[in-house]
Image (cartoon, rainbow, N blue to C red; front, top):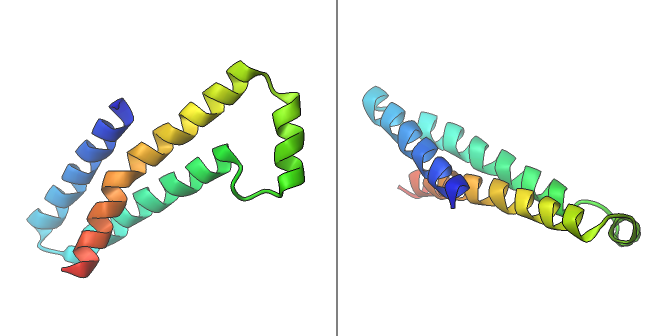
Length: 94
């Protein structure tokens, strides 16, 4: 929940910067970049970009606590990027 609130605060700050400068592309580029990088980091932590053999080996070699920590970190990155990605998509649609 803290990560989502931090992402929301960051999205508000980026929106405020774009509003003050009256430039919609700043909002799109900054919030979209933060959202995309956060989603990529989340995918890397979960293991979306590796083959199933590597995932299986990693699953066998890590403990339950390590797995929970890795998934929680991925969820944190996802929740951080979600408001920023939504703001970037919203500014493109408007």
